[in-house]
Length: 292
Image (cartoon, rainbow, N blue to C red; front, side, top):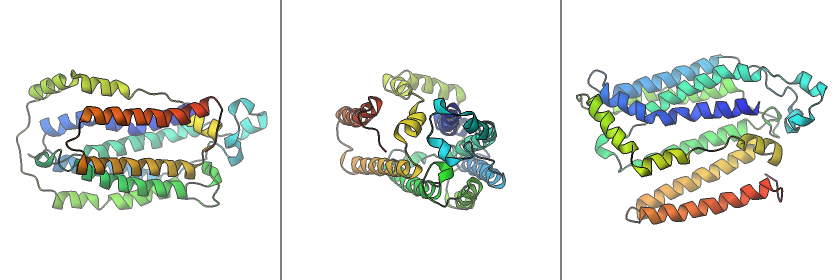
């Protein structure tokens, strides 16, 4: 099941890697003369449709029909445990993974900063988005922390209800996008010129090195489950702290760091992240201290 979880997690965030293709689409194929607004409506409509479909679909049975089996290493499964595990859960979840994939495509498609203000309001955008990310993390952390989800609470929401809540929040964005976003009609960008500029950008070392730096390992989920025993609520608290630090760093940089040396800033923050992450990671790997 760990491979299915890793695959699902990757597919859900994969649309973020397609931003360059959304940019090509909106710049080179404007709809009715609009490069941004109409494509944003398409994105929100796609996202809302996927959420409604997931809200109306049954959640299905969980992988662990007995919650206490979650903490048992697969190597220690007895025939009795294997008999009550729902091994079809992974295939049942495939539908939801694909729906969330297209919902994410719709969301990322509308994630565009106005051309005339590009680069000037990026920090504010990230700050607002991070606030709502934290709200979502709180919702998932506290409302999906029952025994069925590997937690300790005696209550929880179900997945269709969560999708209903998110759909209700998303629905007003469609008319807001149409009535409050102002955009003048523009001619399309030459596809050949766009691709030429994109190719020149990809060949820059700062770009292709950053692309390869995102290659990572896939064992984080099993390590959390079997080695450390992380519960959803503690995982949520960790993610919230990370989001707050990220938002604070973005806002501090926009206020005081616009004239700092970017090379020195990347060097210092890189060293700090390596030390902080390395200490906790190696303590867990070598079994010196394993606790959530």
